[in-house]
Image 1: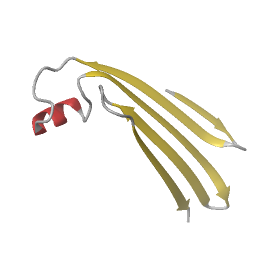
Image 2: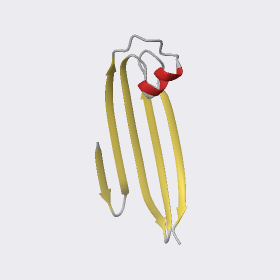
Image 3: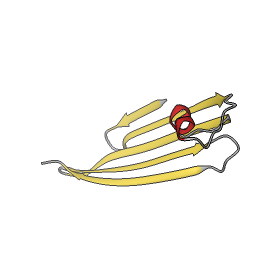
Image 4: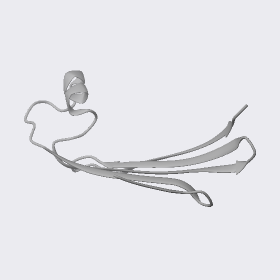
Length: 87
């Protein structure tokens, strides 16, 4: 995990993790989904990046990207953008 903060560029946060799971039960069962936290048996990679910046007086912009590579499955990518008004 890493976080960099500078007044001109804003705040950049990065995070990455690895989880090696050795699970022999039925991975499609609801209880397995809860236990494994949506990961799969095998090598699981998770990564995250966030950029926050004040773009005006009382206005903040946040860009967020999250990815995961569960077991032998395909990578899943999620992106979000948020604009906040601070009153």
